[in-house]
Image (cartoon, rainbow, N blue to C red; front, side):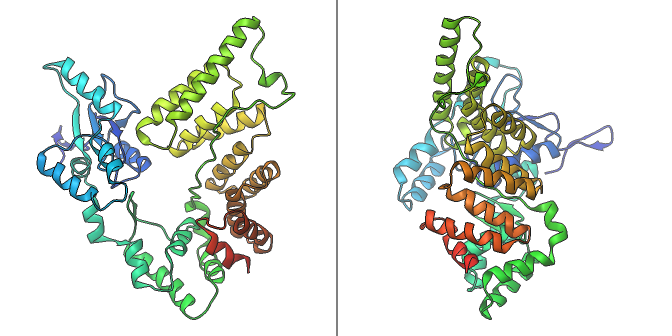
Length: 404
């Protein structure tokens, strides 16, 4: 699709558009989708308003099937799933944002309505490949593992975490690599086929690309979330509401906790409720600025949206108010690692483990950090700790290899 021409210049396809996404995207990660809109001249918002011009409905998320044939196709796909009934509810239920867009369109009458696009329509408009196109043009993890038998899937994913492999695209269904990455994959596979330990293969590949890794490494660690409120005994003044009026302060604190609980219920990793969760956390902090659990969980939302500066500021503020929440130290370590500040990341992970030595992920990511710093001997105890604490964990086979 060509872009319109005005004054002799080609306008970007999303120029002037204020785009909102709802539901899970199958072709792009949410952060990549926001960046794409900005690159194509548009802007994004977290929720639908009268200023919204376009709503994109994720292919794996919300919205009714546009016609009976699509609905039948969806039902056929769902029968292959062990949770077919749950998928069916999710696919056919309308999200809050979609309902709001339809309400505004009904109210606006003849004025410019909000365009409601499927994900496939959005991909075509934006000029990016649909999931089917990705499968034809690139190599998925499944293809790679089938072709290179010495490489297990967890090994491929670890090479991505270490920045040795750089996916050309990620979807909710798979990760895709371009042709140049196949040379690295083959090199790793050949080393393993010759009996070279995987940890030695990884270190050799890292050493070959050390100069670039400082710039392109992304840890992608899931932030630790606070589930329930707690107030430590003997908490100092920073953890206590201002004593302007005892009854008012007590009432505000109780209301802040109610907002926190409501936000936590919304904050389950579902993109469709993240904006509402963030708003509820902010309401809690308006009433009680020292409610550290709300600060940490709000920072987590910013982190998942790749709003690193905002997340970092909130984690640091939480630590300044109450330094005994291991979640804040662990999550701040993730950010420092993303920024290439490996020594600072190491300090944060160690502090998180001082506060909670049984948190398996902190051992794993500290081990990864130490490997990146060229300190495999220091990493080894943490690989072992991860094995002991998470015997069924995602990375347990790799931890066993690196701890030998």
